[in-house]
Length: 434
Image 1 (cartoon, rainbow, N blue to C red):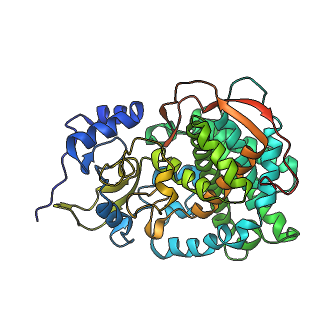
Image 2 (image 1 turned 90 degrees about the vertical axis):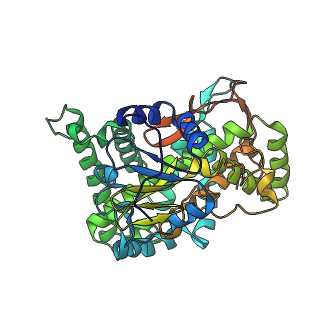
Image 3 (image 1 turned 60 degrees about the vertical axis):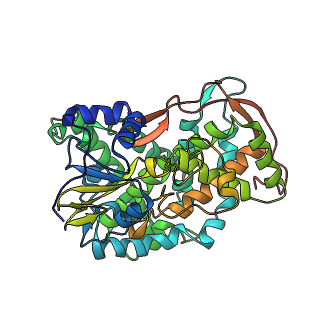
């Protein structure tokens, strides 16, 4: 089989890149209509990228091992932010080691132990939401998920320290969302230059995390059961700081975005919200779980997950050469008419009776690179949602559904999921919000 790339848009790289950012959904859907389940994009700052959305090919891409393809090379643009020891930068044995250390801390019984703390964080946050006037929900969800990471995952009990870390991270993310990936702009021209400010903010945040790690060495937390307390025995300081940074960045932004989409979609179906409330009142989560799955299907946070080929890959009727990136296209895989009836319709009942299909539902990726925090994110979403539904009456701020917009590499509601809090309901003792 000759080495060849699948067809793709015959547009200059600069034009494709502009369309990728300015028309994130329309451009993908046009490519799917024109080229089908497999096509090639040529975007700036990287090699050609072959995107697939057919479930069998999606599974093939996600199953690639480190000998066949590198994920670290594809994620390298995030290294200035996350650090070279981040699990997202690693391949092969180094990646598997890091995965074995971190995964148990975000899974199983540890999740259930966090329920009360997550509910308390949500109740406190809702108490500060403005009454009967529009506000964007996405920033409020970021506040919640960030607090959950710092208190539940890291075990930061000191309010002043949490505030200091939070301010540093928010400033860092606000200034380093897109331009930082351009190598030509990565020049430290002093503390007032863009890259200079980024480097100094990143160093400040790393220093705060390192100080917390060293304090735990000297005086472990009372529970000694948090990520820092457990991993400090198995990682050196540089590895642990980069792991904490990865959890901070990846763990709060993605979950907050999915929560914002959940409420943006469900509040437009009041009957669905009441059905969920009724089920949660009798401690049944079937509809809630299905609605979370449907939210992640129709509004995934990322458009695709990619690998950089180290060996030729036979992909359908094509042989893709080394050096090319291959990606599982999450958005298009979730919208295939062959996989879903009425794929453009938000319909949680499609998942109420059956689990998602392999290769057709991939919001957390798959294979050995499946998102480490997938279980924690799903559990956190469920706890946040059931608590909000128990204590708040919300409605959309506008009758017009919000479009999909791009923030750095994530797909977010174009107006931040604007809502109106009509009233607060005191949480019943022993109720769903506890």
